Amino acid sequence: MNKIKIIGEPVLREKSELITDIDEEIAKLAQDMGVIMQESNGIGLAAPQIGLSKRMFVTYAPNDKLRVFINPDIIMTSPETSAYEEGCLSIPGVYADVTRSSAVAIQAFNEKGKLFKLDADGILARVILHEYDHLQGKMFVDYLSEKKQQRILKKFRKK
Ligand SMILES: [Zn+2]
Image 1 (tube, protein in one colour):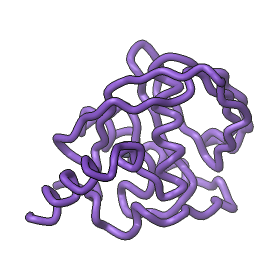
Image 2 (cartoon, rainbow, N blue to C red):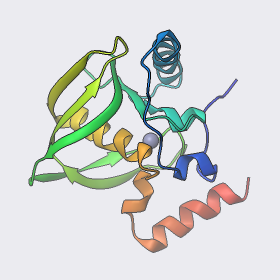
Image 3 (cartoon, rainbow, N blue to C red):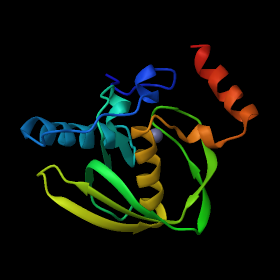
Image 4 (tube, protein in one colour):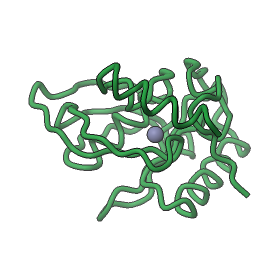
């Protein structure tokens, strides 16, 4: 049972829609996403990755807790950047260094509808930026050279 959408699925390239009501259904979805993420050994999962074009993602960075971000807004990204090897549950088996801001400030609602702000750095900042990209229809391979992207896309087209 694999619910995770793989690169090539149009939903992964859509700009996700705002969630208007943070109700029980959304809370349940957040819980389900947490389970799917952990079953897949992921440290982040965005709603488009399970076929839902909604502005919501979950993270579970090492040495951190499970976090839910609904209708997130990136408030600040640091000018300092760092490169780190990334992967994505929607692009299985592909890993590559991506340069991103080292720190981020984000505002979002949790599954209870409570607004919160979070300053993150390290892996959590990276996961947040990676997952936020999914809500914009962006994937980490977009940061790679054209040549590398072609090679990756070819691999997934063959299947
Ligand atoms: Zn991803």
